[in-house]
Image (cartoon, rainbow, N blue to C red):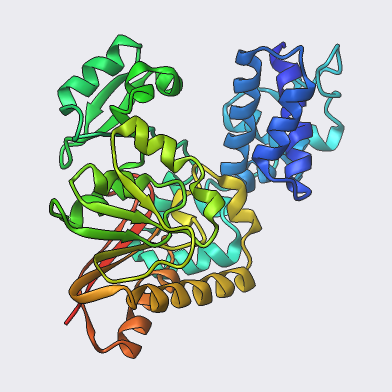
Length: 382
């Protein structure tokens, strides 16, 4: 595909996404129906779509319309290119610019444009002086981080194994078992190190949160909202005896295979778990505002009403999970959110109705201090 044809394909996909189709669903359907598109074409179109969703407000303003075509015109202008060079109408290229489209609007450079207005206002209040820099970071592609399976290899051995397959990495200064891919990111899933369970894909921020739990070998841990099992695997690698549970057991369908690959023993509790544990981890469903670099269409689907439903769900999960914490044990609360309503406010609410718990520590991570936006807190049951 020529560059202009890729732009036209991206514009059509963006129209579908703006109409309510999830981005991944639209891209998968297009890839299956576009046999003429090679792997390079598919990746290029994907990048055009995701970059424009991250910068949707800015590019719509630069392009004169919040449509797929407008976003592609805005992309050209943002990159210092004349859109008329691609919008020629020849072959599979987009139709030529209209006189209105050819008139470049005067748009201020404001990263807050790339967030829904009500969310920008909340984040500005919640993050204070950090908001402009965090908003700017959310416009960029997220880095790829890997967690070294310390039960199998050292960080240096994992780096060497990845390098053999063309994946170059640097360790995080504060957490040597966290490796940032600096080249060959798209080769990770095919690498021997990944297939043999030496490394797992996991962002730096949740890795920091798991390390802060300081689990000891033999501790009984309940991962109450296990999902795909990333945190369960990380805690098992430290020697904990992990039980994984999720309200939707289908989310854990890949966990047994991942555990086998990593050499980890993880018990599954698809029904309601029983008994008490030394540590209960609740990585609750949330807005995902800290991960909007990876799922940028999600920020445009969130509504105030949806956020209220999420905070009610989070409160219920914490209350139920607390029943499984033994006296002297810990309850860990985690979100991949930057919003205070899902983080500090939830901890305050929980402590107000559970006087048997006290706050041990809490931390908010942002792209300025780690990688994804992430909140974690540990509460101790007296």
